[in-house]
Image 1: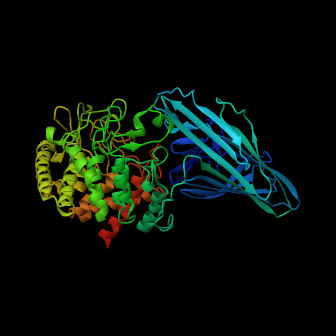
Image 2: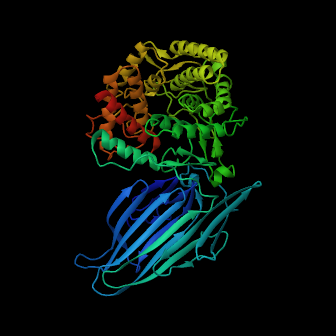
Image 3: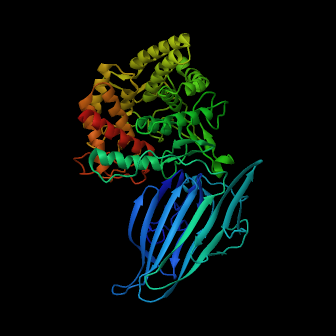
Length: 635
């Protein structure tokens, strides 16, 4: 990586738009491949570099929130040198794009001339190409363009057609201010060239005077969609549970966005940098966790998933009728079917979670509207999902997509205690808990909202039978604890793992078993003092800095805590919630997606996981939940 001023990656996010830049707001994608302004999974700005009189600038301090930053910039000088230039750069992102205001002040004693320049490049790269997993794609047929329109704005565009399907992306860059700005195109307008221009703004300022250059970058993809409404102000400076809740709410609000393809609905994106879209599992769990603090959001998520519910069979997309979406993408590679993630259904748990979420809604008309989707989802559980045929919800690993299709989706996430990887069609323990809760909750809807007592009786009988089968097949007698999964031969995979905490949340366990699971999750091989490990430290594949085999995920921990509280295990729930609060304090209350599984004895603060998403919807929702649990247990 080349040395660039403020070269660490700083992220702004709001309304589904993300900017990754240096800490002073410059984008250098050539030097830092993950830099850029991203809209709809496409990097619409790959270069955005501010210069004044061609002088390098450095930060003199910054004020930041998830979606905006104000940076004081001063020229680089020698120790005893002064400069007459002071710049304040204000940047913010929202669902429409990027807004920037550059305030230039002459702090000297004489009139001075300044030239402000902003170098602009747009390579329109798909984020899947940036976060490459080793695959390469021939996109040579793509055509880029740039022009100055009649109003003087810079218009940058990209188009690619494949097999009769077209993908288009583009932005419009407008500049205004007290002095005239001029766009100068610095590359030829050729299809193979990355569009590049420079905005030039000459300024003369008397002593003490200042002026402002305003810039707006907006997407050219369709009509603007409604802004996600915010529920409360941003991060709190308070400490403890109050600071935890306020900061987490600001992080969560920053991830709210119009649903791709369904812009009348607001959904929580899963997280930055690469998950700014609708995810079935993530959006449902995070919305359920914050339903009390963000009422109305869950209804939009359920509607979005009902509208994208599977209707046909597609091996490539793992789609089946009635199945609920895993993820939704609208980028070039997804739209043109280079990758299967345009609409991808590779999750075993989104469908039962959808039913659980639908049952939490109270709008009578919406529940009537959702009845066909709920019936289709139940039909998937009992049909292709495997419940009636095999006794459990199962999945077959997808070699072209996700091998594992629960929330722990790493290739090695489901393993035996001795380190062997589980093989065959997998039945995850927590998914059976979700399925049980889905059957019970849908039975209540059938009886009370859809006037179908016969179907309600049928669903309740299916739930009762599943509960009995689960105890018979998943319970490890030697450990007195549930297995993480059944493998393809129906053998119980014997690792001690955090998946059991989700069983507390779903309610499938008896009170006696729930008490045993809660106590076991708080033993030293599972509980670090900062949270619950994803995998016991006694397991062969345990590693404190793995993604799913020993790290701590706040949402995973807090689902267990909520389940403890639901079973009357108040003291245990309080221990877990206080651990998450303590961990959050070391991250400035901005909880990341996950952190290391080191115990408090091994290191006096939680150890960062280098690639953890932040902000991330699950983690922010977990922090909000921790604050709520603490209020409940502490009074």
